[in-house]
Image (cartoon, rainbow, N blue to C red; front, side, top):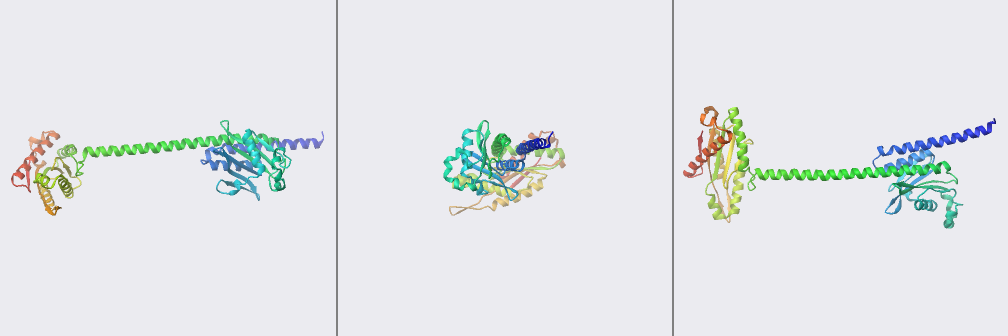
Length: 399
């Protein structure tokens, strides 16, 4: 066998294998992009770089459809022995498309199939550009374009160009449409993924907003059900619920607890003489003055019109009376100017205490709710005595 034909055959086979390896390397690079890149621009850039580096292409560009118009998305080319990339907004070179390449790109989009211009100087389809032939020395001689398809519809055009004629052989003409198809599916999958992610984020945001609004609404209604809207103090419902738990702990651990009822003196006169608006102002200020004298563990509530109640954990009758004196003084010091007149008021209180040092069978056998009612009734009786004695005083009764 002659060596020359054999060498030629081996060279052809080697070239084929080189083309196959280049094609497989390019497709492998493209196939891994979806998992590694989240942004479309990054995916496009890396796909075109893989095509240029693995396939020996001089320059490739991608144009994407936007509202029916082809717009440059990215371009990759060899310059001074290095791969140079540009994407929309980064380099005006992306938008620099020769009339020859532009014509082939439009034809590929219209016919939805690969278009190859072997030599732009002798292509009969470019006769309309005859007036530009004198300038074609700076333009590509070979242009290979393939539509980028997704779900059977074009989403763009991939363009390969080279300054020499006949730069793209039959193998490349078969491979480029395959690459474009892969690229189209990658773009479609990426867009679908981004769309799903955005939808999930938006739904998550809406859900979080609904949950936040629900929590706020729940807190609002809980607050409404437990807090007096005028003074901001706890209401009667919360007071008796919390009072039962405080007494349960006191009885279980043998700790003293005091109960106090307070009532503004002559409050009806304030409403009659100054109006309910002033009366509301007085109630709010009195509530704040009472709260300022208390410990964090004490429970203060407005349980009626001008009536307040206190539960004082870990407090014996003597401690409750000391606090009562401070509360009386705090209310006496309040002063309001209404229509040039000075308005002052006082408060009366009744205190009942549960002293575990002198336990009485009468209350020790009571349920916590009943014991609270008994304390309330006892403190109310003491308040009545304080009112009978002229008000502005504190009276105590110990169970």
